[in-house]
Length: 211
Image (tube, rainbow, N blue to C red; front, side, top):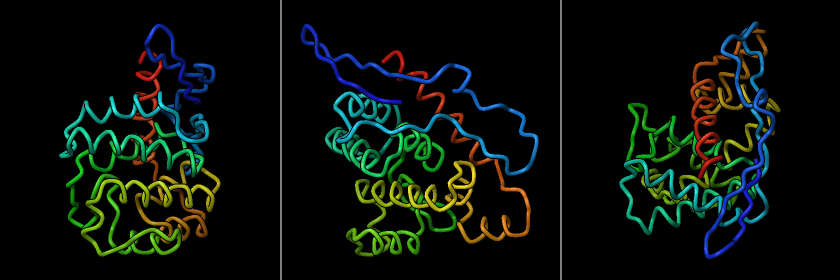
């Protein structure tokens, strides 16, 4: 999907180009465990785009984020910018955030994952070091801007590693070590988490068409 901004009579119009409707749906039945599910992950225009920011801000405003309006506005910009930089659809990023934290910035899991994209401190520290991002300890994951930067970079790295959307999302949820071991054994890749992300992704796509 590509977001394009067009101004006319003082209004900002969002035009969303999508693939054929048949390509948007993820089939509810998968014939083989671990079979790749591939919704149309496409790349937003370089720089994110003002219309993409507007839509992301709209979605943030629909949820209880625990952030101020100014923080939500900046967060929308960061999501659009970082998604573009790492060649991810920002709506996919929103779908992961929705799945992980329901957009609540101060979320913490029983296993210690924190923030919007529910990263564990060990993962956050590793990604920050690899991509030369600031890291000041586990509480830094409650910084929404750092959290989404780390999460987007991590998801992008997993997609490059597995070259498969289902496996990348499974690795984001279960950890790449566990998923790689299952693949080596010829075992199926867990699909429940990915299906949930894909469902939210389609939901955001549908709303974006009429935004």
